Image (cartoon, rainbow over all chains, first blue to last red; front, side, top):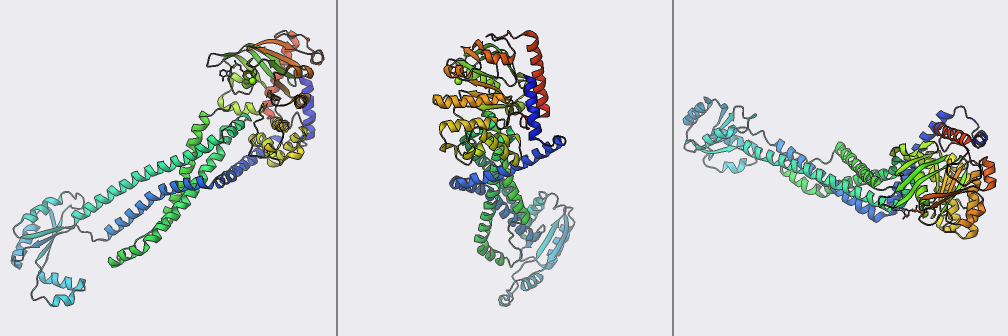
Amino acid sequence: MNRRVATIRVKLEKSAAPAPAPRAPAHKRRRMGAWREHHARSFRASLRRLAGRPGATALTLLVMSLALCLPFLLWLLLDNARALGGHLDDARGIGVFLKPEIDAATARSFADKLRRRTDVAVVAIKTPEEGLAEFRSQSGFADALKVLQSNPLPTVLIVTPKIAAASARATPALVDELAHDKHVDQVQYDALWRQRLDAILAFTARVAGVLAMLLGLAALLVVGNTVRNDIVGRAEEISVMQLLGADRAFVRRPFLYTGLWYGALAGLVALLLIAGVEIALAAPLDQLTSSYGGRFTIHGLSWVQAIALFGTSVMLGWLGAWIATSRQLRLGRPQ
Amino acid sequence: MIKFEQVGKKYPSGQEALSELSFELDAGEMAFIAGHSGAGKSTLLRMVALMDRPTRGQITVNGQNLAKTKARHVPRVRRGVGMVFQDHRLLMDRSVFDNVALPLEIAGCARGEIGRRVRAALDKVGLLAREAAAPVTLSTGEQQRVGIARAIVGKPPVLIADEPTGNLDPMLSAEIMKLFAEFEQVGTTVLVASHDLNLIKRMGKRVLVLDHGKLIDDFRPAAAAASNNAVARSARDDYPPSPASATNGEGQQVGAGQDAAVPPLSPGQGDA
Ligand SMILES: Nc1ncnc2c1ncn2[C@@H]1O[C@H](COP(=O)(O)OP(=O)(O)O)[C@@H](O)[C@H]1O
Ligand SMILES: [Mg+2]
């Protein structure tokens, strides 16, 4: 019985496979080719499937790309705000405006007293005359200033605190003391609002980070859910393939490509959306920057950032599909 | 090729679908599973295809002990078992050709080979002309024949069918059954479940009769028994002792060797 089968098999093999000698490597090579072919086929078929139901695809892409571009836009805004902050003078110095009745000699002795303090590095004196000259040269007010009969500016001491850069919190003690001194009219401490700006920027950056995570998760869920629906809709096909001996990787492949396509397309749409926003905001931003005398420029998404956005999107699409297939293929056993 | 040893299956619901079932099918042998509805025919076939596992006993298919088959090896075992379903289960959004090509794609055949073998399989079931057709445009009998082509295109050593003629009229049924008998001729082990006793009788093949999950008869027609060199008796365990055990051992070795060297899809039996 078995021998009969065996001889039949041998005969058939002889007729069907003319060159049995280099068979094992040839067989392997053939398998690799077939594997690549299945990838290519899955790649094309999944795109065809997306094109087959344009409504659902468009909706998924829109939700996904919005979720992707919002954190990037926020990030862009932050980046520019940081650049704007950096352009302002490094205002670590404390501007001490002395009372108008203080004369030059008193001002000098007050400055000397301050210089002896351990927490003060440098004290510069700016007399009213120097102040006026600086004012004249800097702003275009020269003509208007000519009208003035007397110099309205007070003497100003620019006090640079020691170790202020490292421990920004130490300076306010000095600032406070100066503000309460009997010679002092007003203290202007720019570092204070710089600190506040930094804090606000750091907070916004954190918000952007958290938002990016949440929206990334949303994008993941959107893709995952779309792929899950796809899987449920093709349950019979999956069952049949599994009964015909398809392994997990084979069944999963087209769905992973679906996720990849969603990711890639959503990434492109998100880039288009960001470009659209940049174009829409270009004119008002121009006005804003020119009001700053063109000292800083607004920058858009760089190439690196654009590629990062696209890569993130592709990865999220793939991951969403991977999670959905893992869950569904474990739950679904062929019937 | 297929060996059941004291197999029992109890569903979680408590229903005992099979009990103490033992039988053996040689390579290239064909047998029917007969029995009333609910006798356990589908359950038996489901276990051959690893769609379900027995709660007792051992099943060996193609020399592989199914109880020891890990989940990740299930696909490989299934590739060695061609399956035909009562409702054919063709994928309606693919052409006849693509349906039949599916097992080859899964097994990783190159495109040229797929084309050749799909046409050979379609030719065998007489549907070569319809390869580009959509399955919905075919008659029920033709659809079932496509299902059979899909089951045998990978040249699996074992072919199982659960009520393959359940939806067909008597004439088509006989045609389909004859088709199965042809695969036996080329060395495929064929196991077909059917409740159509008249049809089964006319086929003149071995019949395993189930009743409430028990094997109550193992009927071998005289002609088949003679060619099998076995005693034409209905019984579970009364094979002639020595030849039977020799055959078993050899069968398993052949099965195992074949599994390693020649995957189910390499040019082998069939196609004649
Ligand atoms: N999934 C299941 N869960 C519980 N009981 C089942 C299940 N499948 C089948 N059965 C029971 O097992 C017995 C055998 O069923 P089946 O193998 O389908 O019989 P047949 O195919 O011979 O009609 C029946 O009593 C049936 O009710
Ligand atoms: Mg049944």
